[in-house]
Length: 137
Image 1 (cartoon, one colour):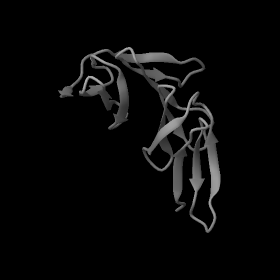
Image 2 (cartoon, helix red, strand yellow):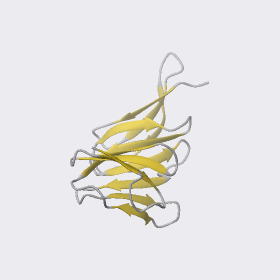
Image 3 (tube, helix red, strand yellow):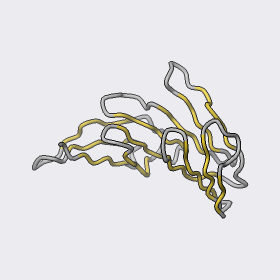
Image 4 (cartoon, helix red, strand yellow):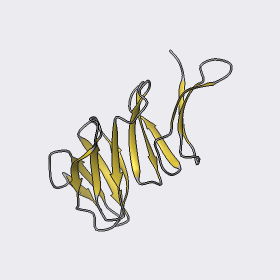
């Protein structure tokens, strides 16, 4: 099984490297972010997320040139889930419970995620539910 490394870069790109041989090679490069890509995380062997100072999280899959979904956090205290599966994206759901800017999200599964904010709280949210399932202070 190939060994993969996923890295973000200050040049706005994210790259999947195959490092299973004696020398690594670029398997795929993604160029959709509009600012430095600061963090990346694998969901499974093919699907991964990247976040950027452009205030977006991109869900990508190896072999697919564009993100499957784009999630936006913002400085207006909201966390927004975008659906970009069609030719035009649309807001799937907006969460407005934070009292200060939302900084990061981490997905548990396809429906549930945690968001953190400079209001010093973590919200556990689920798509289809308007208020957080749980708030940690």
